[in-house]
Length: 419
Image (cartoon, rainbow, N blue to C red; front, side, top):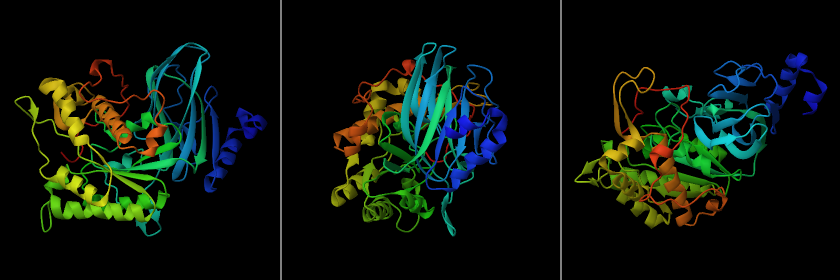
């Protein structure tokens, strides 16, 4: 703030140069007053409104603000609201990680929230990188910026403060398309919704990607990347099984390759002082006579067997999502998945009828299952769930008609890899 007091807005170029200096240091602190003019983002300036011009129009829907920072965890404090108008704001970070649900505030009413947000790039060392795919190259999760995104009926952010955080417990997520931060609407996964339920003492780092198996996650150096960030006391949560069952070749199957790869996760994480948790895979929407059919073969059982043998806690998403789908019913369960008629989204020429991948409502419900599972198995991080959190019973889900999600600027009419 001292810089801002000394230099006027007419000296923005000098201010930009000074603000970029801390990027090379171990500790960074930023303070942005969004009631004042801010630049459009560029690598040279290192911060500013991203993907859109500066929102000179009050209430502009879906605004992005990015800051160029090194890999790491960052304590982010955001003040919502406006002194000039009533507002309604939903706040997200990076690739649509939900932080604050739709929040209506009166004119002059301001409200402040704090979180810890993980930012990462594919870099591991000068000779090693995460082997991200072409789709991920445009993802906000793998770039050089920390990005905030706010949307709503009349959204407004008053102030953003960012500083490096080295104290929060990090929860690293490993998995496939049911876990990953889906970058584009209408797709969503529980990993980008679970962020809503934790305060600043817990940071979620979602390293999952669509189409991955436990083996391909390891081969693409994703666990190696996690090991560069993990500290003793951190957690690693693994949900695999959807794509592993489609592997073929020597050793393929639930009881050999899959079980062996799960053991590799356990050994690496524990050696580094982390705690590993398993999630059994989410069910597919495959009904027969009003009941969900089992489509995952031996994979959930194999995961449970490895967990029992190695004393790994298990969150039973397989069972909870079965109850969830059956409670909603064969027709009602379509509202939790990407089932939409043609023309619902820009450029969508064909109907969506996906029975694996969740929409934002479904992902939100599964995230509630995950946090409830954390509580049930007694994970210490569950003590950091926000005060509004309540246990979730999949036999009594939220009404999809009351769920509020503001669409982003980014859509994808191609389904994620995997099934």
